[in-house]
Amino acid sequence: MARKPDSHHVLPLFCDDLIASCVDMTPACFGAYMRLLCYAWTRGGIPDNEAACTRITGGLEPGDWEAIRGRLVQLDDGRLTHQRLELERVAVAEIREQRSEAGRIGNAVRWGSQTDRKAIAKRSQTDRKSIAPNPSPSLPVREEETHTHTAEDDFRKPGWAADEWQRFVNVWNVTERAEPWRHLTAPDGWADLAATPGWLQRANEALARLPSRQYFDRPLPVTRFFDFVDRIRAGEFADPKAQHQPRSRGRQPAGGNL
Image (cartoon, rainbow, N blue to C red):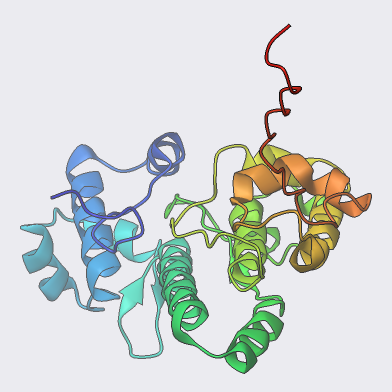
C-alpha cells in the first residue's frame, strides 16, 4: 500500500543540492550521512555519540564522524539533527494538523448546528503562519523561506498556494450553497487562478455573496464557482430559477380539424 506523501516515512530531498553540498565526502561517508539523516527524520534526532552513530550506520571510517558532526545541530534534548531536516519535520507536522483540522471542520459542517458553523467560519478566517516545505535537508536555512502569505510579492514562494487554498477551503466548506470539498488537495488550476492579480480578493467577495444567490438551488461545486466569480460579484444569480410550466396543447375549434 502506497504511503501518503506527508508521512514521516518519506524524506523529501533536492538531489542536486544534496550532492553539491557533500562533494567533500567520500562515498562511504556520504552513505553513512544519509543513514543518519533517515534515522533523524523518523525518530526526531540521532545520539550525539560517535559510537552509537557508528552502530546506526554500520561503520564509520576515520574522519567521517567529524565531517558529519559539523553539519548537524543539537536539539534541546541533547540529540543531533540537521537544521533544514528539522524544519521539514515541523512543516510535515503542520500539514498533517491542517488536514486533520479540515476533517474536523467537515464533520462539524455535516453534523453541527448553525451556531457551530458560524464559529468555525470565523475561526478559519484567521491567518495561520506555516513553514513552507523545502525538500532539501542539505541546504542552510534561509529566513525568507518561512513566511505567511500577506502580500502580492509572496506569490510563487514555496507553499503559498497550499496556504491560500487551506484558508479558502475552510471558509468554503462552511458556506451555504457551496458543495463541500472533500479532497485533501486543491482542484486543478487553483494555483494559476490564485496567482492572478486581484483574483483571490474577487473570489472571497463572491464567496461572501454566495448564500444570497438563490439561483443555485443545489450546492455549487467549487470548480463551477471559479467560473462564476465575477458574475456573482456583478449581482447575477440573485433570483431563483424560473419555474417553467409545461405547455398545454391548444383546444381544437368546435367542428374538428380544418
